[in-house]
Image 1 (cartoon, one colour):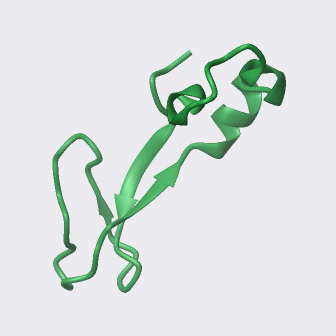
Image 2 (image 1 turned 90 degrees about the horizontal axis):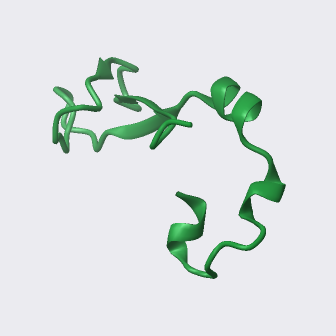
Amino acid sequence: MPYSYLSHLYCPKTLDHYDADRIQQLSQAGAPLLVAYDLQALKQHWKPADLFGREASLWRYH
């Protein structure tokens, strides 16, 4: 299972895509970048039962 299902970053104003492997904050249009996830891959590889038995912290969702 991958570390994250992060697909890419995108600008909400222009919908331009940005590389998620680089630290970035603003798009060329000056808007904060939003995160897109590969939800199809996540749906195939992850089930809610995967959370059972994990520590009750933010990291349980990793």
